[in-house]
Image 1: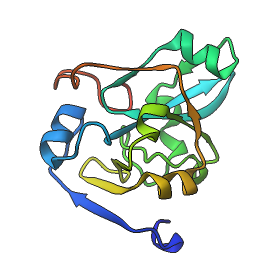
Image 2: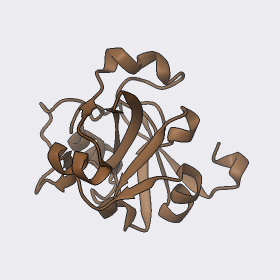
Image 3: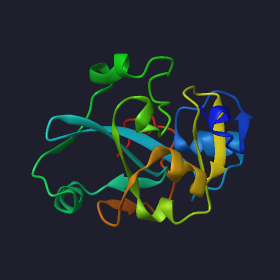
Image 4: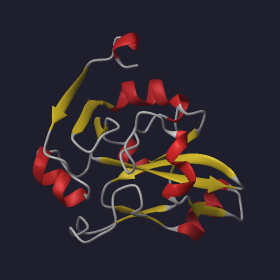
Length: 163
């Protein structure tokens, strides 16, 4: 997809990593640009939330900013078939590929670059945020996410479940 849109990006191959801490150690990516993608159900409709790897969802504020009473984190067993060619927990942040809306955390949107899983646990894509926004067409949210002071430990749930 990136090549067909003439997007300048870099691909970083690394040892398999399943948590933010091990991914940061394996790649040397800056924590402020490393994105995690989680699947949400917003009033029963699947959507992607994209935030920095150290962020957590603040459910009450996310519901308020999205104007809904019901948002829940999808279980991996519910969406495994929705992302063909992607490993569980390694979903790239492009909802257009999967027919989903993308919600992007303002603090990540403010960065000049974004780095994210290429659909596997051993490859990261790094590209400009401007190009990412142009392709993904995310809805940028200024509330609903909080940044942790630290990256989760190795015993934290995989990236796709953290939130």
